[in-house]
Length: 137
Image (tube, rainbow, N blue to C red; front, side, top):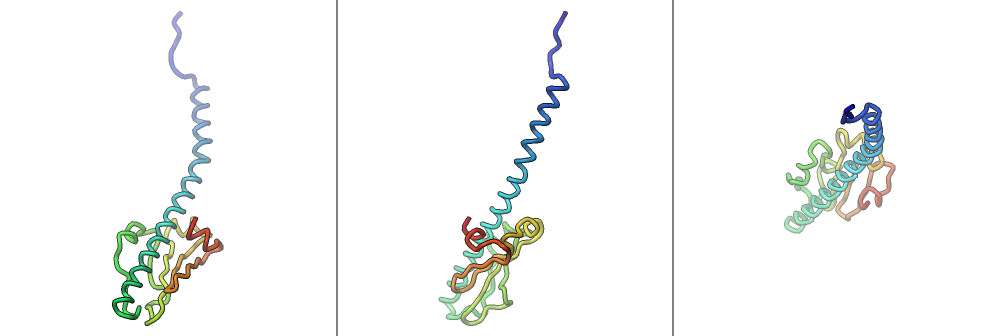
């Protein structure tokens, strides 16, 4: 009598069940990590824009008339965040730049919402999260 080689249906079902459990825990964690990573990149972009605004101010002695340049940072987040001045145009002595979540990022990141920074370096969030948790962690 020869012995058959291979997997039984029971062994195959056990492997499928174990994989399903692993995926059930891993995917939400992965998705959360992606949302946080994109938020951190958006915060870094805001810092880059703020530095650009300060360079503009040192050259022109006012913020008025400045426009946000097209950067690689913002291009990388196209579809996830949009960057703009919060009040339309900067004044001679003030500005506020905000990163507004778009698409899946907006529905997944309700705790932080829109990130913004002004000429004094004041960071804010529109969601229920704290500035420390949304900008630093």
